[in-house]
Amino acid sequence: MSLAERLERYLTRHWGTAATIRDLSRIPGGASRETYRFDAVVEGQVKPLILRRDPTGSLIDTDRRLEYLAFQSFHGRAPVPEPIVLDMDGAELERPFFIMSRVDGGAAASPFTVQPYGEHAQAIGEAFFSALGAIAATDPEGLPLTQAAVTPGSGESWRVALDHWAGVIEADEQHPQPIVRAAIRRLRRAPPPPATAVRVVHGDYRTGNFLHDGQGKILAILDWEMVHLGDPLEDLAWAIDPLWGHYDTSRVAGMIPRAEALAIWSQASGLPIDPAALAWWELFSAVKGQAIWTSAAREYRDGGFKDPVLAISGWYTARRHDEILADRLMRLEGLS
Amino acid sequence: MTPSLPDILVGNFLCFAEPPPPESAGEFMAGKVGVVALLSLLAAQEAERGLSARVWENAAIRAVLTEAAQAYGAAFAEAGAGADVDVTLSALDRTNAALRRSLIALHEAVEAADDTTRDHAILRLYGAMAYARRLDMPPLPGR
Image (tube, rainbow over all chains, first blue to last red; front, side, top):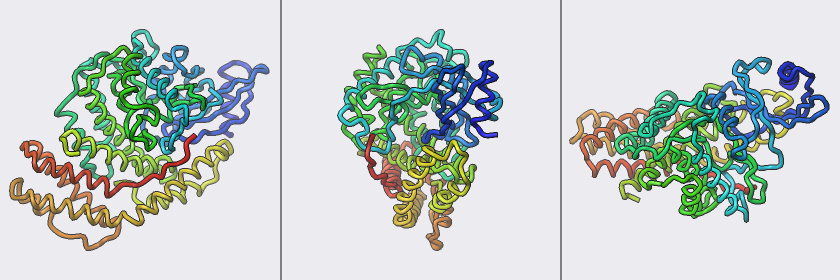
């Protein structure tokens, strides 16, 4: 039975009325979920939808329930698609999945492109950092996400995050990585001050993980698979990591100057930015990146070398983050 | 570092070896072709620079280990002894893995001893190692 037929069978059972699937097509890109666009025709109405299904091999193991609850938490508060249904058992689709509404007419920029936002970079940058600030401003209490997300203490969020990603490197490393290990030791020796507030952390908020209309407007914030509660500076530092810079060192995320991005975020979030804390989270971001790429390399090998996205992640981006890590370590010692 | 150049090139073949299901034959397959093209471009750089980068890195780590042996123990001199005779990628990587483990141990000892001079020398080595192993992604037209 084809995936379209299985999906049709599932939705017919779920909605209790006949559903027809058409134009089912896998979307390229992310390696943490299989993503498909399709239309479901139900009682004469066409519903444009997205299916996110667990892969057989993944860039990083993530919790699809948390991702789904994040969509429930922010749909209506931010440009976030409406979640429709989550099935943790996989049912007819064999692997855990969820379905959400589809936002058409937008584009997601590849991190490997130059000037992806063209003359609208300023407007996109203002919207991008403002939206991130709005996420950070949201009190998590009462959000659906808190049904499953663990709330760390304000003084513990850094340790929880670092322990997690250092553990990923420990588990998945296939070749010794002295640079990231030096960074992990440094982060432990000099922890940041307690988080000003414990808030929702998207976990992968960056260029490429949102849809824009090509005219300076953000249509949808996507890819919440690494969502958790923690220090909101984690998201800010990740968003401005040089890996997502689109080859432009004068602007962050290929959008706007760094100082402007930080000011917009701070105003939208209502939270101050401690430079020392942000510096800690920026070094952490490169460690987190290296952990993700280390897992990708492991999955590439374990999956029989068949997913080229895992190859790029485990190879090119891993080496790029080694450069970023080494540079940050030297800067912190006044060596560059 | 993983994956190796042979892993990448074999993978570029294997990822097209099986016919895709119908829902993955259009946009998804076009995206896959684009990623494989990028991998091929980067593989050309690795084919040109990968061997010399490994030979250089192994020699540089040996020099740091040997220099530090008097202060930090003869084990580092032993770890830093030898030379690369077999210069295949796999042999160089096996040697490199052992050298990197010793470098990690040395750096931990240097940090514990507050030995700033050697700490900075090792950090500079890290910068040089990352640069030697770099892959230059060409800027692609944006959208």
